[in-house]
Length: 270
Image (tube, rainbow, N blue to C red; front, side):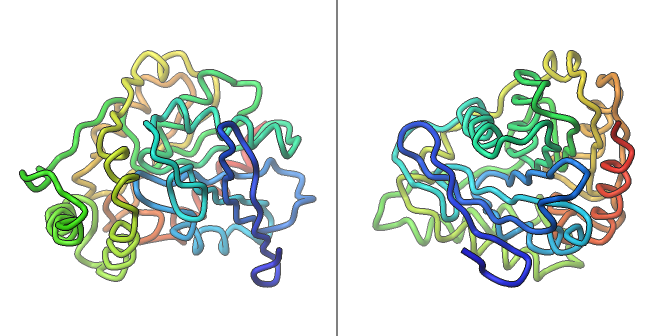
């Protein structure tokens, strides 16, 4: 179904009777490979709206909700980057694309790396935003585990603690928008997301054959510029772009700069 001129909302069936929500934008007949946009933990496809709009004149983009997120199926099951990567593999095969560009942010970048390592035949390029080879949460969540009754209070406190690590103080609108999305995730799904562990991707990154653009926020305290530099150094074909005056959500805080980097990267792919 069309949600506005030039965009298409679609669902794709994958394993476990799960439906993945996809928001398409831009010309489907574009000569360049489609760009599949993969969001972070507790985020959703709508966070890519500005980036999709900027790329849509000459790129076909698809912003996907992982299972358990946004408008995709919500199941009370263990979640992992490997499971998400398998879902995206099925999505690519469903549409019958040749090679795609995977543009992943945070958890989405871990999924992109996992899939590129497993199926390089499906991936023509990687855009890794807010990415790290290994990751641990840089702040402490509230000490007392939440219950359904205390859920809203717990989320408010956790979001307050997260803000300084994820967002630049020059972009409070982005912090409000993302925090609001974090606040509406169902209790059971959130519990599974909290239990999920970031995979150790060092060996996978060293073995990647897929070209990569690594994008970092200059003031990101969650996945730092240093962590992005590690990926750039240990990947055989990667370049690094640091976006000034942004933090972890650089693609929302300065979408124009990120769109320019993505456009140049995709244009340079063979």
